[in-house]
Image 1 (cartoon, rainbow, N blue to C red):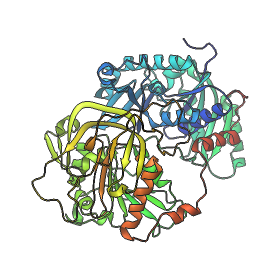
Image 2: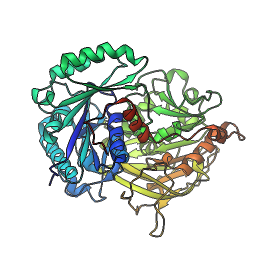
Image 3: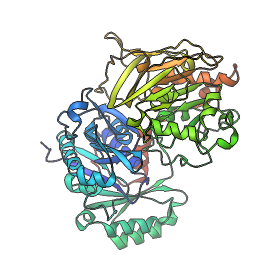
Image 4: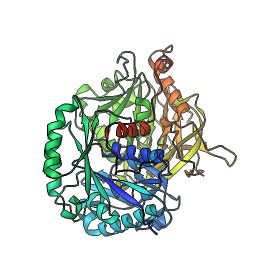
Length: 574
């Protein structure tokens, strides 16, 4: 039963990527610091950046829930996982009951209560699944409100999409279901901030307009006093107070999706981590092919956060003009990471059609494949028509690991801790690593008729193994805010089902474990291999030793609000 005193504050935006996630995470940490029982909430999210979290008891609205809930884990958007960390509560599927994961071709996988329900175009979602999704939203909010004093809900996109007002789960419906106050967030960097605020208010349904308790302007650069006439004119016109103006300052929270990466068909790379004062010539460069259906880009953020490490996202583009054997796109790279993908098969075909596969095969430094990237590294993919849009049942992989992946409609979702005995690019990493898996397909050893490529160790190694009952599941993950109540699964799989590696040259390793580089030992081992791939005497430590300790991104987001936002009446003052 919902607490009678539970209050919901909906952080809604005038557009996408205006800073809603940062404001919501900051509020969650601020409220937690003040001793308020707070819970994050986003009714419906659209993102391929997801995390595996425990499914909530009673969350069974997905038609596939009964058959797919055996692990007890489900998927939520990474922003709600982050906000739960900020609130210091264990993340669950109730924090994001509906997740839409774009899979290409105008379709999205519909995940309800953490479990895939269908893969459909948008129109079919609204016709056949929206009512089920709305019921899941109502029940999830009710369960959260039974324990929380306050719920910080994050909207999606713009709250003023008048073509969607009758079916806008994340904004209009959330405000009504939760009887929420609404805080509008607008981004001044893109220009027209006052027009977007006034226009948004004008387009809101009357009952939603009456719920607006203030506005926050984000990403401001310059002299705030120059804004004063505009702020006063806006308040006089609308009666809505501007609660604050946040400076352009990134607290370091994980990206919600891949929108700020280069477009899949772009020709110019995008670099992350190059604001550390280390020159490109001195930095360790990790090349990441920007797959058209890239997912879980948060896997790379711990690398980019390291001083002296630059993560370079390379648009796949059409590289057939550089020659079939050229490694030109990777000429400046010290290591390569193949990231996750929402559609392994179609992204593998895209790499091949663009002439990029030869560059990866010819690369002589360390190569790591994560989840879908692991599947790309194998010899072949079987039942490929289950995953991709191709009619072919078998698609040849990169052939860097003697494994093959067999696809089925089953999806493996679990938060887990594994033992690691490093090999290849992870040589030297030992102990435990904590992370999560979200994937279709199972990987197994592949038989090879031909001898391995020159310089490659033919002995396939399996650096990951399940935990035993006597092992400590703590690991060495970076997140100091991990909640004590988090569940992890003791995996009963073994061998290449968890990961595989080959030595020789600088080595290749693949694993299904998302969050691998959030574990310090694994990250350090990989960066050591990357640093020494071009110079055996090169080390990352000299940059680490000169860097200061970064504050928690949750604390940084909260500090932004405390310093720049009038919180009176928005949050309890304790």
